[in-house]
Length: 365
Image (cartoon, rainbow, N blue to C red):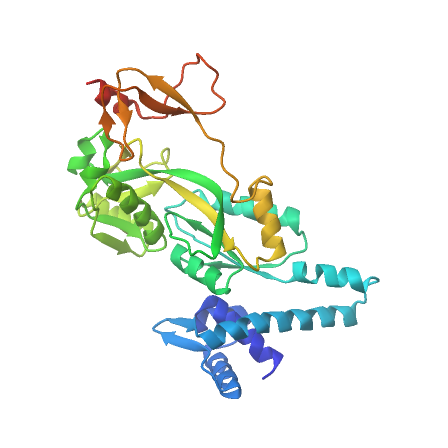
């Protein structure tokens, strides 16, 4: 076992794919596979479970990953000190961990036009917290990011949509975006001003493979609160294919934060009901053993409050005679209705409640 084999192993463990790892290491796939096999033979353990196109770490592989990263960090630090001695060894030790490369992942999809802006916020926070830091950037689906952060393969990851987190993980919100329904101009939902959750019951939904879990999870969670089950889910290679299925009337699709972008003439956007989910883009990181630079990035993103700090609570406006809303969004009369207002709204001001006038009209009818 040598350092080269350990570097190969860490790269394969991070990418979970021999072909991707070989591209990053600039070697062909066959020699890389042989090196991994030799490492397993030298240690007498199986490091990866082979699952079709993915390589999943075994328990022994996860233990080796932690130790290999620490050993490679020490080797890199030793090499730097020999080549370019620095005056303060104590200071070097204090900053050694913050100079270790981060392994970071995010989700890339044309369905999420706000992801670049969210990624920019994270990179800006990283540049402020650790200007000399190196970060290995990977692209993964949200559910894989969550699993790999939990397993220690990733230091942190940027996900979008409704993805359940493990108890050992935490998150800090980076951005919120609204979801819009996109349907064929001939679809019966195209004639609706606003689509409620119950209207999506048993309606096929086509989504980009990169985001189907997070986006469809948010939709299912919302519809489930109203007793509806959307689907079946049709997973497509990309957003354009999902739009093609919607244009043909076979399914509907979803867009996030694209209310002002042009659509083909055979497609139309329809607003979802007032309580439809907003897609949360969040940085996911481990609660324990969090890299110090990741902790600094989280602090910068949360304004120093930390992820567990409560968000400011909105004030409530009471409108007699309109009714109240249950936790499922059902109007109940004749009690006063509660409409959320920004905490900065002065008393007596005129407020436009987002774009949900259709909801108010339906309650007044």
